[in-house]
Image (cartoon, rainbow, N blue to C red):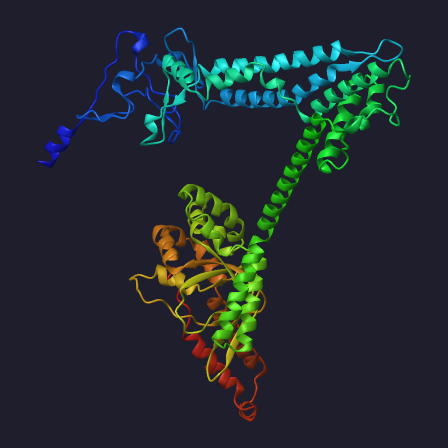
Length: 588
């Protein structure tokens, strides 16, 4: 009954190729790529991408609006060639469209820099000629040509928008969105959008070029004031641009030396210097007259300087907050730990150990409490590649892993966890269950094992040594025993130590799935050579054999052994006790 119900609700659409080449269905550009596409085409080939529709007609894309496609021979990686007078349709994900967008962005930046240069084409007649304002034809021609080229680029961008596929809004309800490839639908969508075509057309029309910038306003006002001062006073005095004269130049007094030159470069540099000085000092160098235009201009300059200063202070605060946020977080955590230790009345030695560990972890981890928490939500493949990049070089320092292939190393990198130990800390105690296998990367560790009657066998472990290798034999043992093995020794840090650890369940996963690699003779010899238990057992046996050899060569009398308190007998007894617990790794 359930199968019949579902078969009535859904049906699979089957399409057949038509005789007309213009109506042959083809798969979209997204379907030809590896992996899941960013956007999916509304004209995807049904033969490659089966579509399921509800009988009630609840499809997100109306069937009547679905476009036809051309044959695969007419399809390229960056655009399509559909039927109709509109020409090719470009894919917004293609490389050519991305490069074009960068070029348009650069052209818009050039247009912002070119517009104020129009004001510098104005100049004042000097050198014996009748005073007057004229336009420098060379500067005006160069600026006009550059601006025309920029407008041409923007016009081409406007035309490209009529041939650029867009994401259907209906397809965003479910899924990642679908691209519309119909040329008529693209043109209609671009024309009907108030923020697309009409805004781009408004930008091309030379209306925004009428807006005055602060530098251009300054240059225009300066020439106008010079003209007003020159013509009325020309019959009375010969010094038209005298700073100590009676004419009130106001804020334009700083630019009087600029009138003596017609160099465009000097005009641009001098005006920019004045603008920077005015904004950086928030208008302190301005002395306006009673004219309202000068007063309003000075007010705008002061407000602009205040706004820039406010933005500067805000950015500095954001930067300082980003720099000191982790340090502040560490200080808050340190204060909380101090308060907790005082509240619980911990003894002073324990407090010092806690504080020392917190400082060492901060110095080692750089303020990140758990760096693995940062990547745990990433995709599995990306997370594995990151952990391989971070851990592979350190893991390869462990001699046991030199004999393993890349597949096993990838699984180990994905499951290891970094550990930090401070000086004097006990990593593992004798008799405790071994819950993790630790690989020393930096630092030295003291290993001590109780033999008999309080006698300790101690040695120092260097980087590359394995701690907790009992877990390896526990994982390889058959039949398997759920009870964790007990540690044979106590491990204490002699200096700050960095290491990696494998939990017992992770190690069991690796040994169960890659057991064939651990049966390698080279791996078995390496595991036994760097095992702390096998090393200690071998050292005692070598010492016992050497003492027995010396005893046989020197032939020490029995009376002397008795006089020395039976030291040789005790040594043999201890060696025999230690040999009775020979390590078993189940690697045979």
